[in-house]
Length: 93
Image 1 (cartoon, rainbow, N blue to C red):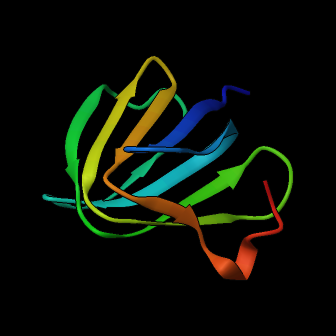
Image 2: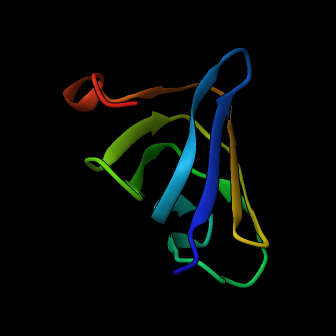
């Protein structure tokens, strides 16, 4: 089964990276869900939660201020102005 390679970075620090089954975020055009083999996308990220369903482990929620969201060849790159793993799941990385 295909998986996504996900990387989340903020302007001044690394947030999370790893293999995932799904990524969900809010963009300027509305909420977007990304599964493996999704068509390429480049979007403006709105402030809110980014949900990541890793290949193994529990769901990860990242709180992010605006930024950019890119998808190409099963690679998802999220560059946020500011982002951090939600306190409710801070122990999961």
